[in-house]
Image (cartoon, rainbow, N blue to C red; front, top):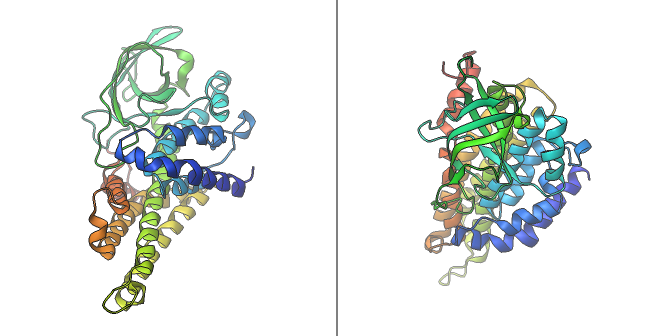
Length: 384
């Protein structure tokens, strides 16, 4: 399929399956089983899997568009799908033949779901400095020991891309690595169900790895490659998936309040809210905010797909800008809709709770602007 056909399939899946499930996902904090399985059945789980492995061979622009579409009806589903695509991209970046057979081809066939397990308790936004330990137990096996937090698709995925640090006596300083851990490995212990203010269906759970043994073939790239993965693969794909998701939230809020302004009529005057100049002005400002954010995201992802190094700055700024956009647009939409928007579990209530996560989801908005400033001023992006 070409990109237009892929996006049509995403939209069809969103409208026929994901939209119907969305209210239950939020109200019951339920992982979006039906939506994710529909995406898998339709081949969309292989969106970023190379074509030679049976996937769709798409990049960041397609990921942004897909998450945007899904995010207009269910931010939780978009987040779960986006994190699967990020994990898939990490596996694919330097995949061995065995990893292609065991992971990428089943992902493309809709038979395998993956995700990231990077964040840890106590490290805050510095997810790229893991404390989870990786020890070479034998020539054939690693042992992993540590804890992860906020693992999206936690307990639901078939595999987890886990960040680790080497602890052997000869391990070099900051020898960070990524390893794929399958769901049925002995020693995986999951924390309680996710109970969040927003993004309530993403199954974001804690994970303890109690001396989990994995074959050395599950190592991604070489020992110490994690920082390469983080900034060459994880960051662009994660920031893109989240940018698309939050853009979808902003668009959904605008669509909701636009319809309200067109439908609502004052009884005493017979005048539609859409005829009031002040509301026309504010609706125009909301549309402009969303559209300029959309153009930034599309521009950034198109540059990145072309391999243009100039993509770094717009990719970094995209999630920061869309975080402000989503929160501001939903807030303003609630004001324009009036008291009706403040009903418990109204559509705008759900969108506001989901949108607020954008600022705190690592890399946080403040950290992204700091990285952006450092890059602009020719300073190292990371602290020493």
